[in-house]
Length: 339
Image 1 (cartoon, rainbow, N blue to C red):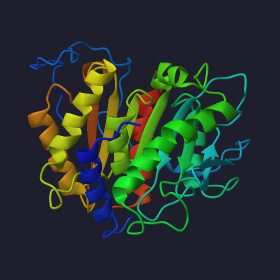
Image 2 (cartoon, one colour):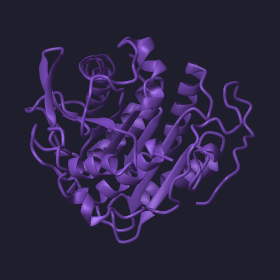
Image 3 (cartoon, rainbow, N blue to C red):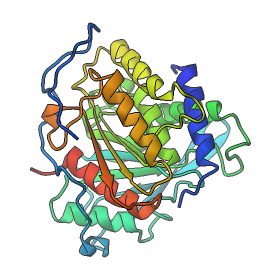
C-alpha cells in the first residue's frame, strides 16, 4: 500500500477537528498550462449534464417503495479485526444485472449504520435511493456503508489518526471492495486489482464530515479503483496546517502521473452549506484548487465533458445528515443519472 505521509498527517488534523465539532461556478474551459507529462486537455469525462444548482428532494422520495429490497449486512476480517458493513440493494436486485457501486462513510461518531441503519430496516437514504431508481433518475446501484474505525472500541484519540487513515485505505482496497464485489453483481468482470481498476467508472466514494475528509484522502490514494468522488461538508482546516490545501493537489498530481491518468479521467462533486461549521474551510479549499491547480481541478456547473469538479452550495444549510442526503442526491444524479 502506498503511503503519502505528509498528506496523511494533514488529513489526520482534519479528522481531529471533526472530533471537536458536532457531526449531527463558474464554468472554466478545459484548458491547461502545465507541462506535466500525463495531464492533458480535452473533454474525456463521461458524457452527461446535470443541474447547475442543488435540486431539492421531493417529499415523495422520503416514502418507502413497495417491493424494496431489504438492506443486508456483510462481515469481513482485516488483520485481527472483524468488522461489518451495511449494503443497500436496489429494488428488484438481480444477479443477472450489473450495478454501479457507491462506498460511503459517515461522520466522526458514525459506524456502519450511519446511512442505512441496521440491516433490513427502513432508512431515509434507502427510501431516497429506491425512489430515484424507481423513477428513472439514476441507474440502479448498490451502496456500501462500512465503518471507518478499526473496531467498536477504538475511536479518535485511541489510535494514531495517521494509522487509522492508512489502515482504512488498505482495508478498502484489499478487503471491503473484493468482499462486496465477490458477493454482489457489479461491473467488475473479475474481482482482482486489474478487474477492479477496469471497472472504476462504475464506482464512487463519498463521505460526510469526517467521511468527506476520508473521501479527499481516497482521491489521492485509490484513483485507480474509483472514478467518482463526493466529499460532503468536508473542507480543509488551515488552523491546523496551512499547507493542507496544497497537499491535496500535489498528492493528486503524483497519483495521476503514477497511474498515467489524465485530468479528464475522474470527476468530483462537492457540496457545502453556508451555515455549516466546515463552510469557510471548504471555500478556502475550492479557492486554492482554482488558483494553484487550474490544470487539475477544472470547474464546471453542469457538464461533465467540460470539467472534472463541480461545487454546489446550499444557503442556510447546517452540518446535518438531512443536508447530506440532498448533496448526495445531486451528486449521484451527476454521476449516474439517466439522460
